[in-house]
Amino acid sequence: MPNRKSTRPTRERIIDAAEHLLRTAGLVRTTTKEIAREAGCSEAALYKHYRSKEEIYVRVLRDRLPRLNPLLDELARDPGDAGVAHNLTRVAGHAVRFYAESFPITASLFAEPALRKRHFDGVRELGQGPHKPLEALAGYLRAERERGAIRADADVDAAAALLLGACAQRAFVYDAAEGAPAPESDEVFVAGLVRTLMRGLGGEG
Image (tube, rainbow, N blue to C red; front, side, top):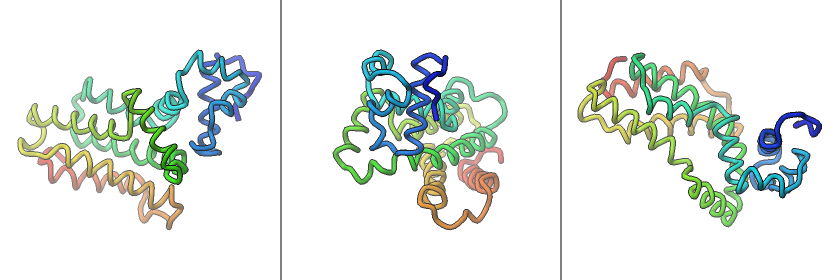
């Protein structure tokens, strides 16, 4: 639980409080009033730092959950020389953990259609949304295709959807939905997923 007497800057205390509430109460029940109370500040002070609850939510996703979006941004700037399979393994590893941690936070939204629409409208206004990792990964693969690291006819949009979709499905089935234990470790799952994708992409495995 965030420490109200913390000497951390107010901006960071707000994110600390939001992360705690999102994990314990879910997105619907995490209001700006509750975040401010948890952070030990006023709502007015909260709005001096963040324009909306959606902006706080996006900050928590980017900074406090496994770094899927920052990793994809990094690959877009510089994919490095480690190779496509290595990079996809990094992405899939982060994606499995990201979706496992983010699904419980957002699950309550799907029972409230009006709140869900308002939330995602606000997130889109910030230039964010669940489509952004998909677009970023497809963009990375497109760059690898252009430099000849994967097949010239590789469908990068389908490959991105397959990788992230598989990671999201695993999180839903085995984590968010509290189903049966996963049949293999995250590492084994990721290795098999990337190996299968690389066969289709025609790059080095």
